[in-house]
Image (cartoon, rainbow, N blue to C red; front, side, top):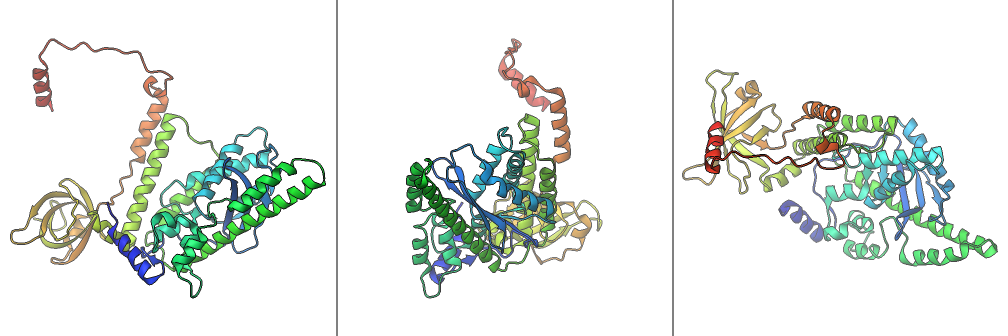
Length: 465
């Protein structure tokens, strides 16, 4: 469905020649005291790392370069592995900044290539496992450990260019911090000519590719070629670092307050990441472990959506345009005994898009009240809808609601089924059913149906139901 509020913000940004915030709160809590940044450069065709700028944000980064990334030599990555391990072991609170999704993809590739590489050193295998944990944590909605600058900015602001153009971090920043007296659209188009996806620009990349043929030799010309390659790679990595630094400053320059219930995101994220970094476990492969992972990610998504909706009025407005949030007026409360069930609330809603169905569970914003929609009915002589709402939780709080007051209903109720599902996965792992764990499907066992007409069988089943 079209996100109308965001489109309006894009039009406003285009007319005002400046990016416009589309959120009232920040989806990321403030940075801790020490923040680690990673800005890599990859080989485009081979998806291999050839340079990394890294270190504590706010300080001069260290840069490692690999003049021949296709070789089996891995010693150049040792400084990066040492710095990353030192930060993860000593930082009281971890925050890792990356410029864009391409950088996160490279972190994932480092984990894939080195975590279980028997030919790599112990420190590089540890680095690979740590990179794998970082990449895995980034898959959880609402996580507070890995900050991907371009994703964060696109989530929080709208620019006057197309969403495809926003994927270029340099072009996006042109709308946030344009040079004085320069049209951001023109500046964005100029910046888009230079890649912002963890790669060198075209001329430098061609030059490096040409020099590598000479650099494989053993004479002085080869030494000079390797030196020039390293200089080009270091320059490219530092440019990526500068882009990351500018993006981080631009994000915090929005000065958006933290979400009210941000603790519901911080504690699970830090606990999950701290445990994973401590054990450096392999990625799950068994069906029960994969199921647990998917359930954990789904729960994180639900919690993130609920916290954001309850904290951010701008997001609720966008939910209203999709019918996921409803502004209502309490017109009647049917409660024979105050403070006890049954309790039925009748709300009047006048909203263009209303995607609420009987049986749906909703919550009242800023009230500990959860209920179920019983009926929806049109109001005679008016354009609104009457919603009958049976209170399931928070009956005493419902007794204090004032009539003719406005409330907001949300469908972002979080249902945590981790305990019963955990028991089911434990049983699944213990019993190891062949249909789930077997290498081949079990042999077919045709069922012999009785000679009863199928319409009579269906009628019997309906009566039993």
